[in-house]
Length: 377
Image (cartoon, rainbow, N blue to C red):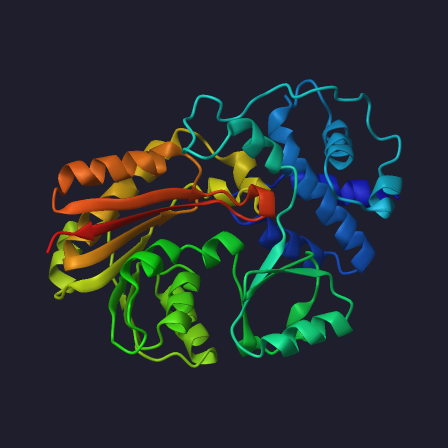
């Protein structure tokens, strides 16, 4: 099975992390149509395994095959076809971790560095949020023998690779990580907003829009303004909102890191400003291990500066008595508690109600930091 090893090398050697690994793999497989589904699965498993563990071991000491074999033996992944293809490829057995990436960085309260490092080796589960027809969704999954676990009233964790898009109606569910599904809990439990009243919300950094779609499902009368610097992102949000039947979601291109743009283009105050800022993504790196592999710790200061500039501008648009919700998917204190501390120092009108790291490792989910503030009346 030399062709499997050849494909693995042809992917790993040139790949530099500038595009998501999933996109890079799709491009490679498109250019090599003779690879069957079993081949593609084996190659993908090997490549992802490499990026989960390679940063722990110096490349000068171990071969690519040493690292992949070690990753396969230490993780929960099982692929007999891949194991057969790589049989006898390793030149030596790796006994223990040689490197400790990001050892010098402070982690947020509630996250143990060693536990986080170990979690990178295991792929998180797929999570969905059931919007409606919940009994029907569960029945269809059971009929197709898809293994799942119910979390709360509306969430399911599902084994990766399950083709739920071919089983479930698109408008009935949302693919959304378990920690993300709980990201609004602090606000909802504190403010207890009236579902029948209009809540004015500014979503400062739209992204994929998962949290706003969650908010609209919970508070259908909320009037949302979602902004981003990318028109394509806002277009995708509008398409998703249309799929789920949501109204009262307006979009606008705004650079929330620019104080001038915010002051000129945002001419009203809001009951809630949702600030889900760009970040290192370290709480999601088990899902995207190539980011763990290629991330330069020096970039953390740039992320923290960007996060503060966005939060610093956005919180000025909270109306008196309103709420400001700061969110990252990072486990590093520089992007979390440090930004909160700096924000409180610059804005005495804000009071911190609570901050917490939602540690998703035990549930094989992402980890996410949430801080809820209230502006003085």
